[in-house]
Each structure stands twice: as C-alpha cells, then as structure tokens.
Amino acid sequence: MTRLRYAGPLLLMLLPGLAAAPLLPTPARAQDAEMNQEAVIRKVLPTVVNILAHARPTPDTASMNASAPEEGDTFEFKSSAGSGFVVDPDGVILTNWHVVAGAYEIFVTFSDGRRVDAEILNAARIIDLALLKVKVEDGHKLQAVTWGDSQKVQIGDSVLAIGNPLGIGTSVSGGIVSALHRNISDTPYDDFIQTDAAINHGNSGGPLFNRKGEVIGVDSAIISPTAANAGLGFALPAYQAQFVIDQLKKYGWVRPGWLGLKIQDVTPDMAHALHMADPHGSIVAWIGPGGPAEAAGLRVGDIIVRFEEDSPPDERALLRDISGSPPGRNVTLGVLRAGKDIEVKATLAEWPRMKWEEANAPMKVPPPHWVIPADLGIKTTVLTDALRTENEIPAGAQGLLVTDVSHGTDAAHRGLQPGDVIMQIGDVAVDSASVLRQQIDAARSSGNDLAMFLVFPKNKGKSEFPSPKWLPLRVSAS
Image (cartoon, rainbow, N blue to C red):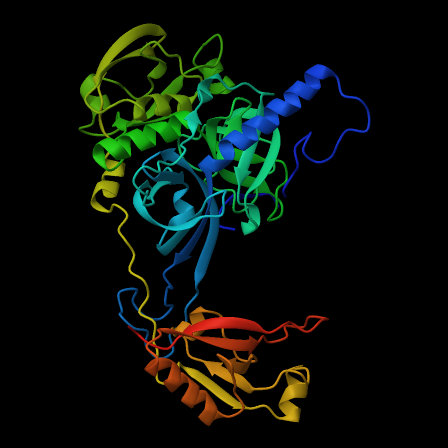
C-alpha cells in the first residue's frame, strides 16, 4: 500500500565526485562539473540547519491546561527531528510547521556544530510552513540562502537536497527533478516539485537547491510503501514559500485572495458534452452567497479559461492564481458561457478560511510542569539473584532495580523505566534505598537542579547486553 508521508519529524546518498575517485580518467568538463558541485555544497552548507523539537506531552485522560498530571494520566513525549534553512541573516529560519507543531523546546544545530535555542516566530499551518527565530550576536549575521526561480525549473534539472534524514545529522543527496506541478492531495493548491534525490523523515523543512546553489523548494513530503525513501520526494516550490514569508512579515499571517466559488477541471467527457473542441479551463460548480463571485455575476456552469493574462491549465493552477493575489485586487476573468467567450470583472476578497490563523497564531508553548516528588517518582528494590535472572541483568551491574516510574515526572521524561538498574549517583555506588535517598538529599542540598545517575538500561531482548549510561535527572523543581 502506497502512503503519503511527511518527510519530517524523524540515506545519505553520496554525490558523484564525493564518494570515491573515479577508476578511469574523467573528461575535463566532467571534472569541472564535479568541482563546481562540490563548491556549491561547501557554499550552501552553512545556510542549512538541523532541528530538534520537544513537544509538550499530551495527557490521554486529563486536560492539556492542567498544571500537573492527575493520577492515572499517561503521556507520550514527542521529539521530532527535522531540517530548516536561514532566510534572514538576523536569525530567521524556515521549516515545515509539522516539524515544530506543539513544541515547547526547539534546538537548532548549524553545520559547524553550534547548537542554539530557537522559538517559533510565526507559521502558516495550512500551508505547513513555520518561521523560527534564533538570537544572533552583534556583528555576527547568519549566512542566508539565495532564492531561485522555481517557476523556471524543468524536468531533468539537477538538484541537491540537504537536511537531517532520520535525525542522523546533516546529509547531502543528489538527483534530478522528476516531475512538476504534482498534486499529492495535501492542499487544494498542490504544485509540488517531485525529485528522486533521497528524502527521508527528518528532511522536512530542508532546502532543495538547484545546480547554482539557489533554493527552488522546501522538502516536505514523500510517497513510499514503507517508511523510507522510495525515490518519490516532494518539495514545496520556492515561489510559494516566498509568498508565505512575505505575508507573515507584512501581516503576521497569510491573507490569500478569494472568489467564493467551487470549481473543477473540465474533463474530456465534459468537453464532449459541452461541444468544446478540447478540454480546458475550470467549470464553476457552486457560487457562495454574498461572495465576490456572486457580486461579479459569475454563474454555475461558467468555464473560467483565463485569469488576467494567465491561462491556468487546471483548477489548482486557477486557485493558486486567485490565492496568490492580494484581497481587494480587481481582476479580469475570461469565461466561456453558453459557448461564448466573455470577460467578467471581479474584486477579490480575503479568504475566510484563513482568518482562523489570525485569531489562532502559534503561541509559545510553556514547558511541562514536571512532577518532582521527594523520591523523584521512582520505586526501587534490592537486586536479588532471581530478579537479575528474570530481567537479564549481568553480574557486573550492581545497584537498585527500578520497579516503577511515575508518569509525568522528570525521570519518566528523560527515559528512566522499570527494569533499569541505578548503579551510582555521582561517584557514590547505590546499593540500598537509604543510600538512594541520602544521595538525592545531598544533591538537593548542594544547590544543583540536576544530579547525575549512572544507569544500566533494561535489556530489551537484545543479543548483547547494553552499556551503562549517565542520565541527568532533575532533583529540584526550581
């Protein structure tokens, strides 16, 4: 079964000339092309970022607005890996909305390894784009991308996709434009660029570059019978992304034009029934009462074949022309009515469907109120030989066996779970409940919010035993 998947919130395909030296001499022109490609990659890498977003836990049985979880609540902590790119040297980064939706904590990592906090500046949720803001030190502007003309892209053009596939880190893949104007039923205005460049979960929000290093699209979705890349990746065209950025900067939300009608493509059978020489245009199926289309005198059954000087090839193209025009604009429509070609003057209004974004602009999500009881919400027991055998714990792992971790606690959030063994707190071995309490109290009295727990993870049926790992657990609510 083929499924549409977002290419985001959680393989590197090396490009020609990067994987290995050729076995046979390469013609001078091909060598130059490879050098140019390598130079383009080096040039644009600083503009691309990896994104890690932690979303607020959503209780199954309690309200999101509760300041603390109730007994019996269960939580699913969501961490999303995605990609983005700098669109303003003053610290503005573009990504997909679904990468950061509901996030209370966002980290952006640059190609040089710098990791900084980010916050959501604004978003156009229906179009699945979001703007993030990071702090920029005085005199240290970020390197921003250069936009390309996505409306001049042709099938067969070489492209580069750079992002954070599967959350493994910055990766580059290359390919060609496989198709244009793809409708994947994501929005009524789909105009995706299709590419065979490797795009996986985690690539969402990353840039699709042309051979000049200009951004022509935003990697946003894949279609695959599995969860992995199948050669069908889709990028939102740059012209749409630029339109959204411009609208968000001007108004704080997107204000598309609106005619107040429903249309559909004229099919070959429709054209035959209407005595048309060939199928073209969009036929009006419904006129909204009191809307701009009704005021202009449009009728059900009219076939719109022109929008100003443009001849939209299908209904999606016409809708893009309308939505990309500012409200209040006077436009001329070319219409076929009863076999006659007429012109209709209309004044575009603002699409009411988008007004919810003005009233419901993305707000800063507060971090969860983690419960930190005196015992951190952890229940333990002395590790006996029977428990060691039952839980497949090797002899070298000494400490207390975790039997329960309360939902909604910092310990649960950070991954402590029943079956783990607490071996140490700091440099002190933990072999009894009294020692555990003493070390927690000592950590609190030291003034630190966090204490280091050395934990032997639960063996989840692996053939090899896991290794101990350090977990910083919060011991103070302050």
